[in-house]
Each structure stands twice: as structure tokens, then as C-alpha cells.
Image (tube, rainbow, N blue to C red; front, top):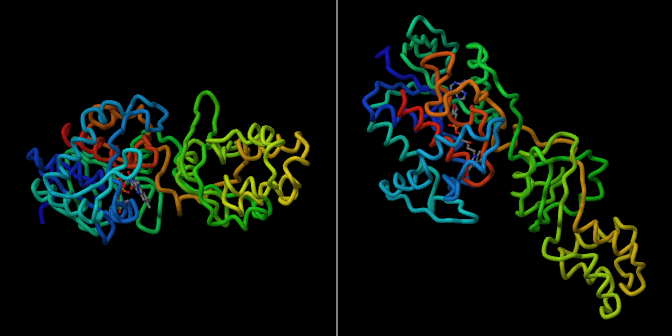
Length: 398
Ligand code: FDA
């Protein structure tokens, strides 16, 4: 079995396959190594099995990083249109679902097959399943100690992703290798993750589990502020749904979230103005705006009776009700963690990497791509776009 390569890519997920294909098609001798038994499991399960493979509006504004400028170069050189051209070449049908999010019509397996075919065009060699015990550098060559024997390579690309969903093979490999070579790592944290509350504090909300509604949610300060208008979902342990997944990446432990459960209506104003003309009781008024269970929960949390008539309710209490709906401040106690997180925030500190090539500025020939790097996209196809773009930047530079 061949032992020496120009490029060894470790991690055959979205970024790893893309990088191997690009480098291979430029004539580099590439080996792609992954410890998993099934190829690209995260692509397979993504987007509910239909892979939200990019976002047509993806730009640097949709990414979080200690250096928000770092992603600009790679994203501008490999755009959503570039990935769409590839999809069209393979005749993979797709559709836009919501806010520029593009999904396969059929299955995420098509994206995996396409990337595999692109690797084949680049004559990429595979070592899979194959675990890597360590990487050393001997002069200009990297020595990879793997379960398939020693592999030598002039360049190594680390594409092993982040810590999310350990049960399908996520590891801290990228961070370990970075630290071994003296590169800084921004502390990883779960991102795009449901938020949880203390069991006792959440008790009154348990009957609301399963309710979903469109909301506005915000958190943060002037330095880092997140604000989204998306759907919220009540769960048995806390809050989820796209609104919460999005805001979770901005949420700092201990900080409150502010939710507007009825963004289209100023509830205080509507209640005060309606006092003379609306004959209904509070329960009926709220039920025309919000799911009935939630409406009753809010009224009862305000120590009011859903059967109370609007006209008989003091203005002060109506204002409190209005605030409870339009400005609900809640403090999550934590998150569901890496078990449920779609991504990992943080990662290889971008100060260690070239934004053109993704190569370490300290260790010639060592590259990091994809989710391993401290660049994290919002929910909605942005993370795959970063995987494609950062991998292409490295694949073209090696
Ligand atoms: P990725 O995780 O894809 O690949 C890493 C590879 O490295 C894996 O094959 C793994 O087996 C391998 N590996 C890890 N440790 C190793 C080791 N020690 N040795 C050897 N191999 C190792 N994004 C998006 O844009 N649209 C979407 O629809 C979704 N949906 C989605 C759903 C769910 C449930 C999750 C968990 C995530 C998403 N994402 C997403 C996020 C997206 O999947 C993620 O950002 C990309 O897959 C990251 O690509 P990478 O190639 O960097 O890592």
C-alpha cells in the first residue's frame, strides 16, 4: 500500500472531502483518512436528511468568530453559486425552503455521493475506517501514526470538525493537534443548541411543551448582540426551535434572553385601547393572538383569571400582561450541550491561520479547515458553506 503522499487530509466530512477533491484534481497525491465506518454521517443527518447545503445569501455577517473578518477571503472566493454549479453538474435537484436556505429535493446522500465522485476524479486514496494515534513532523515531512500503518505527507489538513454529536464520531482531535504544535485554541462551546432551565423553574411551563410560534428573540450587549425572528418551540426541559438555536450561539451563561411572543402586536396598547370597546374576557382576547394553552399560561402567571373581563382589569395589570408577552425576559440555566448542538463555537484561533490558505503561520504545511476553525455559521446552510469555502481555499493553496 502506498505510504507517501503530497497531502493527508484527516476527517472525511464536508470539509475534508471537498479539500481532498480540490487538491487531488490539481494533481496532488492525496490520502483521506477517517475513523468512522460510515462516510460523512453529519451530511447524511443534516437538514432532516435533505442537507441544507448552503444559503444563497451567505456572507461574513452570518458567522461568529473572535475575528469576524477572517472568513471574508475564503467566502468571497468560493460562493454559494459555486456550490450550486457543482450540484447542477451532478443534476441534483434542490429547492429554497426559507430565508435563502437551499435543500436537496431528494436526499443528503446525493451530496455525499457527489463529493465522493469528486474525490474519485482527483484519484484520492482512502484509509477508512482508520484511526490516527498521533502526528509528528520530521523536517519537511509529517509522519502520521495510523491504524493503517505509518503515512508520510508533505502537508496535513485537519478536517475533523468540532465536538457536536459525539455518538456519531465527533472528537477533539483538531484542538489536540493544534495545541501539540503550539497553536492557540478558542475555548469550544456548544452552538445552535436548545436551552434548558432548572427543573423547578420550568415546572409551570411543562404544560406548554410542544407549542411552537413565531417570535423575536434577542440577547447580548453592544459588543456581541444576537437578534432573530424565527419559530420558538417549548420543550419539556426548556426552549428550542430555530429562534432558540440561533440565539444560543450568542447567549452567554447567566445572561437573560428577551422574547417578544407577539412581534406584530403592541399588546399593552391593544388592551388599553380595547377596554371600552371589547366585551370579551382576557382568555378569549389572548386566544385570538396566541395558542390557547400559552395564552392561559401567561394570564395565570400574571395572577389573573382568564375569565376576567378586559373592562374590569386595572391598567397596571394590563401593562404587566403586555410586557409579559412583548418583553418576556428569561434566564436559561444551561444548554443541552454537545449531545444536541448542531455546531461547535470556538476552535482553532484564526490568528494562527492564513485567511487565504488556512495554513498555520507557525507550522508550514499544517492546515485546518471547516468547523474545527473558530468560524461558526448561523443556522441555515451557513456552516456547510464555510466547510466548502475553507476547504477549497486550502485545496487550492496546498
Ligand atoms: P464534519 O463533522 O462534517 O466531519 C468531520 C469528520 O472527521 C467526520 O467524518 C469524523 O468521523 C472525522 N473525525 C473526527 N475525529 C476524528 C479522528 N480523531 N480521527 C479521524 N477522523 C475523525 N450545517 C448546515 O450548513 N446545514 C445543515 O442542514 C446542517 N444540519 C446539521 C444537522 C445536525 C444534526 C448537525 C449535528 C449539524 C448540522 N450542520 C448543518 C452542521 C454541519 O454538519 C457541520 O458544520 C459540518 O458538517 C462541518 O463540516 P466538517 O467537515 O468541518 O466536519
